[in-house]
Image (cartoon, rainbow, N blue to C red):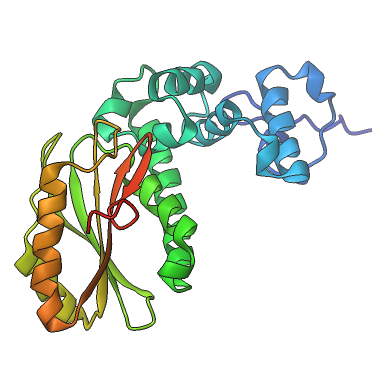
Length: 253
């Protein structure tokens, strides 16, 4: 009688069943330690959806794919302590992430891949319908991409005559409290793209989205440059990690 087949293990000592879906598990997950913990999180995710997974668990699962030999639970909790939220973690600058012990290049790359996937999904949703009719969706997209930047970034969203997104382009990067904006370049690019309108966007790394006097004056200059060419400036949005501000809503343009 042949000897029973031995259970195949990965080089890390974790069972293959812990991360290959559909394989039977010959042991009670409760007896498998870290292996069982990951299996239970995976099963909960697949059975109940992403809302059933806490932020620290989601980070654990993402990091396990990049760091299979590490205990990712303390790393995930340190990330949330340092960057305050899941969005803050995946949006954190690469140099800041590298300062977290145990994360390494592979872990940082995994987190930035999650951010890239989220932004791509949000951008697709923004581009699939008229922007002005789906304002909350646009705000989600802008906050995901800019709320945690450490320097100011000035962007322009160019729209067609149906208010659909043609292009979202970074016009300039600046310092912690200033990003240059050039009205001529904004208008020139709108003409090149055959855009009929534009939404201006920049972030405040301080977190406070309150418009400054310079923000208001710069917006007026761009509006004045665009008007003779029948290009409408719909709004200027300022994004901070504590919220956002609309110059149009504040009656500042």
